[in-house]
Length: 281
Image (cartoon, rainbow, N blue to C red):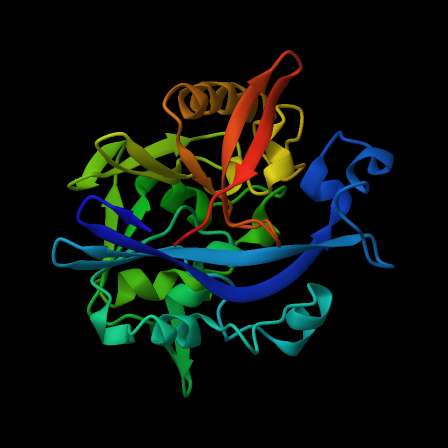
């Protein structure tokens, strides 16, 4: 996909499974299972999909998946599978080596977004992309250092503490245009200061909402994961950004939907609904 000076690629880093109730919140299983089949442990499949943006002299990675350093116990618990679409392998298919990456934008520091940011080398854990700057919101960094009992299990310190130790961490404080045509937007519902990315040029816009809208089904306003710390904030943010998405004909990127990568949004009498898939070509 081309937007202005940027060429954009989806980067598949494997899949994992989470409890269906945690993904769909107050939506009853009898409803959500019409579009999403659960396994015998009531888990549903999630993609761990990232974004690669090349242009203006930069090679930018947005999020990093679960990474390759998870324990066997973790892999079994979440049915983690990244054998065929591991992060570095997917980047290599796009002609990108770890040393080529100039910037990594981490939407937030939950393990399925920041796991690939670091890698194990012998006994040491170090940044996966040694020449890159890693961008995290300051409030999210503080949350990761002092999580609540509700979200503590979502943070694994080895995914992000080495970024500070190796001097590659860049803390942001609020929304900004990080690079020309690449805007950082924020949402506090899922977790404090989750970063979202809007890439725009002329009348074409790609919106990366992260866990604000993880699946196409989450375009519908009541679909809010039970993980979210402030679900009513999530609701307000969805109304705000989905209204813009419809009015300005944005293309949405779905980080966790196992079958749909990008698509449009429509407004109906019953609210917002997923429109149609959009090819990444």
